[in-house]
Length: 447
Image (cartoon, rainbow, N blue to C red):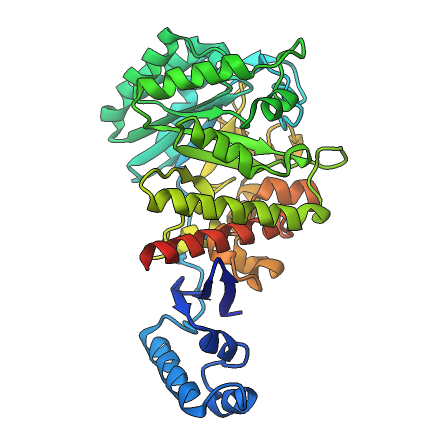
């Protein structure tokens, strides 16, 4: 497959898959592309005879041939870059500083914070060693990342502070620059903690599911009371303290709130401008998403895309993570093929220092890949992740969205297919819809 065409919100759009070029076209060209392969002008003319004037068809074909010569239509297939066959350089770690939590979220993949094992906190020694692991294994890479994660990382602020201090000391010594992020449910975000996070330039990912009834249903306290009021107040204080910058609000929607566009809009109406709301990943439960939900979920993404576009054009816009697609200067080829780098460039670190391919694999013990004190021990598994890119996945090779989603989430593939090579199909369908909406938005804003 070399092209993808679609109609959305009044626009006929054509994507050249390999180059990433997007063309806004008319109905004639849209119909031509049902037949045209770059070399069969006569067949196109015959197929459209009686529907369009032959002169108009000929003019359109001439323009399409020009796009092909420019390399923005029927562009050649991508090949695997050499770096994906070389030893990987670690770029990012997710530090599970707390395998414990003060909420009991119904959809939590972490088993209410303990990831299927004992509740525990990361020691300062393990935190230091994790920093040394990324320094030792990042090679000449200058920019590295650490995300403080859990469970709830604010339950272990002693280790967070210690690791931050250690990172800042090691940066000039190692010629590295670390971007630090902390993902939190916001329950413990008091003024002192907020000030510390701001002073140390730590980005925030803040969990909020949208409207009160939606949030409280899935994100209650241990005693089953709602957390919405406390969480919203703390998030507002944190976001205001950093002038609306350096944060993301991240929510999850389930079968209980298929009208999730209303949750995104509710957060935007409250003045938050950096938003991400994700579909729940679950099976064998009543809140899971199923193929029967897809028509409504597609409709919700279209509602959200239209609202997003209107607000942007009116100068009161917000950012929605999945609509932030750069159709002009996308990622490099290696990134487009391999995605997040789980298992070879990115690892999760448990409180005991064990390495897993990413935070969602923690607790799936057969995916333990090493330890920060000993390094990557299961090199075969690490290499398996490195080679699980879109050109090695049969379903992905034939998908128009392959160079945007990079094959989807490995953890979701494993959960639903018990293999890295078969993507999570429901997730694929939602991703493709989000991408069409994102491309439409970019095209509209360029008009």
